[in-house]
Image (cartoon, rainbow, N blue to C red; front, side, top):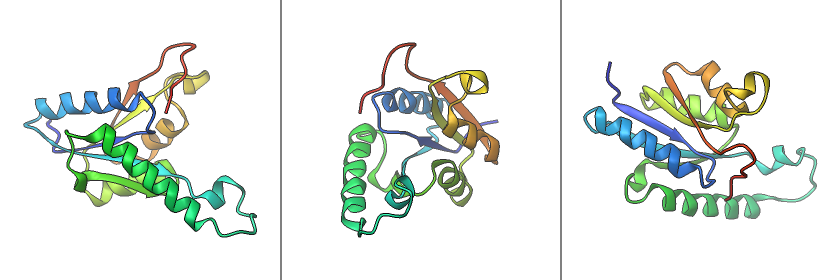
Length: 150
């Protein structure tokens, strides 16, 4: 089986480059499969409980602009701007939606490793794995005691 379209889901930390590098290597072994990269922002209203009596639109727009710039820094020069996506929503849901709508046959995500079942997969990775209609590769990132930086 070969892959034709790989989706790389990143959190914009320093580990994002490692995840992208793994996807690039896989794409090269699969006749230069197409790579899309995405980052998901949670809506501010959701992050703060939805009960804030103010308009958060401008702040959400600033976060979106910052995420797009950071994603471009990670993706360039490997991934065309048209294949770089910042979306607002719940990460696992948005990753599944994108994968289904764009014919993705491999999703590559980072896994920080925690405890219990999360030792293998973090919460986003677990959500992606459980609902994916295609293969999922969880790339082990970070080392014990090492914090990821933005």
